[in-house]
Image (cartoon, rainbow, N blue to C red; front, side, top):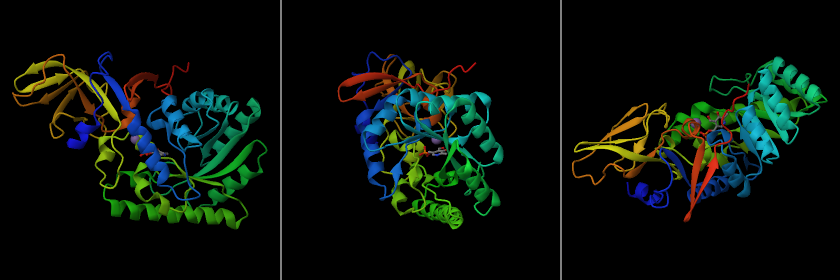
Amino acid sequence: MTETRRALPSLDLLAGVPTPALVVDVDRARQNHRRAVASLAPGQVLRPHFKAHKCTALAHLQLAHGATTVCCQTTWEAVVLARQGVSDIMVTNQVVDPAALAELAEAAGAASVSALVDAPVHLALLEATARRAGVSFGVLVEIEVGMNRCGVGVESDALVELATAIAASDVLRFDGLQSYDGQVTGVIDPVARREASIVSNTLTRRAVERLRAVGIDVPIVAGCATAHLPFVGELDAWTDIQAGSYLLMDTTYGAFPDLDYPGALFCLATVIHRSPERIVLDVGLKHTAVDRGPPTWVGDTTAALQLSDEHTAIAVSPDSPLSIGDRTFLLPSHIDPTINLYPTLWFVDGDRVERHPVDGRMPDRT
Ligand code: PLP
Ligand code: MN
């Protein structure tokens, strides 16, 4: 509670900002970023995940403070990053849709761009796109390490076959492996999380060794998330750590006892109703993701919140000083889908307030 109060941006500074609004404490974000970079071992780099905030101003902050590369999840994010001068972009996804392949090619015209494959058809699509557009792509084979999403098995023939085919292509470059153990990111207990990460680390090392055994060099092994940061230096399989949430954080990750990364994202709201027992804010389901539960109100972090489309009702005591027109903050429970709901982020940096677009959101692509 005390920590939350200390962390709140100044309501006076934000007086001119229309609500609902998302506010970034830039100094905290910078500190979180420095802490993440400092937790890496030699041979590891932070490749921050752009999908977390989709804001190129924040990507530039990360690149100015110790990150040299980024990753993103969608091809339009890659286009936006390339247009903003980011030179090394990994799309941590398979790319299949024709419009997405065209976007990947556009990004590759301005930056070094890589993407994932886990089937020969992905490779064929990337090759054909690269030839048609006169560009080249880096390619990583995704391995399945327990999340049950994409990827080939660590012991599969497909792993070696795909890597061999990429290495033989004149328009594709074999960059290495993508190994994302997303199942680990939900484990709050630090001991159990570290143990689960060591299991995926071992699987990932095995995949690298299989490729090396047939003479294929594996320059990049990308993966991990914010959940791994407390012990990431011990995980010797990965070279590129693609954490995203660590920069701004949310209340879900805030509950991890070993993650010393304070929240830097706040949802500014206005009180639109006051009765003795309740306040209602002008923020609702359309302004804060609830897939990981409701947001938290800074005025009483234990209060139950009742959300509807454009309202949040919060039970308060009759002597609460809040009245209609006052402003307050909610803390998002999951930053990525929350930020995706907003066109703008408001940066508070010392006594400066700046507005920056969430320019990596999906545009009209027709
Ligand atoms: N890498 C991939 C492929 C992801 O899907 C995610 C998040 O879902 C991340 C990295 C980053 O995770 P986090 O925001 O938990 O740091
Ligand atoms: Mn997320």
